[in-house]
Image (cartoon, rainbow, N blue to C red; front, side):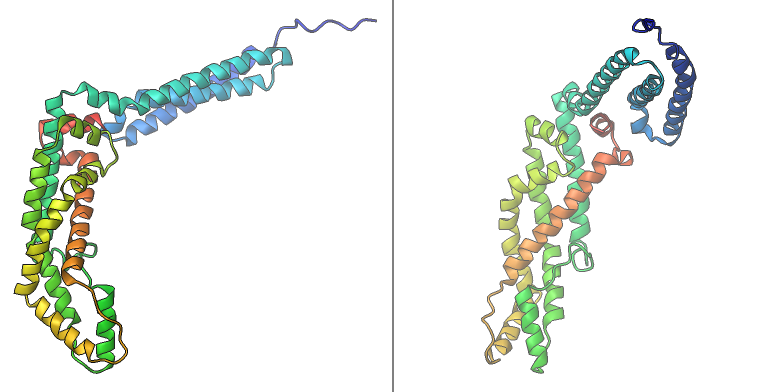
Length: 309
């Protein structure tokens, strides 16, 4: 007796699967959407449509898979095609989101981009140079503080063991005071670099990483800042008496037997460390201005940075 032909049998459970699983996953989507809307900040709320689309797509795929698990084999190809189509849709949505920053900047006028970024950098440079240029701006700062060169610290330890004078703390303090005195000059150079920034530079920076402007400023003005800071630091080290103390320490150090030559330059060391501290805090300010809407204190700052966030 011939077996009945089931190759064209209707998938009895397809509709049941969608009827049961569809509402369940739709409820999950709506719940997730509601929770995200409650907790999202102003910048995230405008992305809720993308969130809903992606979450809905995932939920629908899960529903399709769940329903597909109980359908006959001859209906499986339908679900495979549906899942592939949903995957393509999600990939398309993701790529659109990734390029939104670039398209947003392109939509702004050149003057808006240039003025917005220059305002932000002027604000950041002023805050940093005022902070580091104040008394103890370098000396008391856990990041910017300039320690003695390693060789000098070693020499001081040897002098202490030999019962000779201790100069390290005073030299270190005066070296930081010298760096603090250079911040006004550093600020002037940075402001001039910002003034010379082109529209192309500004657009590239806005679309770059959170320290793109800092990298730009160090690249175009780092040599000038170092050249300006070096003689100022030399004079400041001399005026504060740090170089005199250093020479006294070297004189005592040279009297010790079997010690290596001490070739550390306080000026070179202080200049390099002052540069590091300066650009570290400019990068901090840049990242903060980019991401914190409370720092967008003018209309043009709001327009520019809301576009790239």
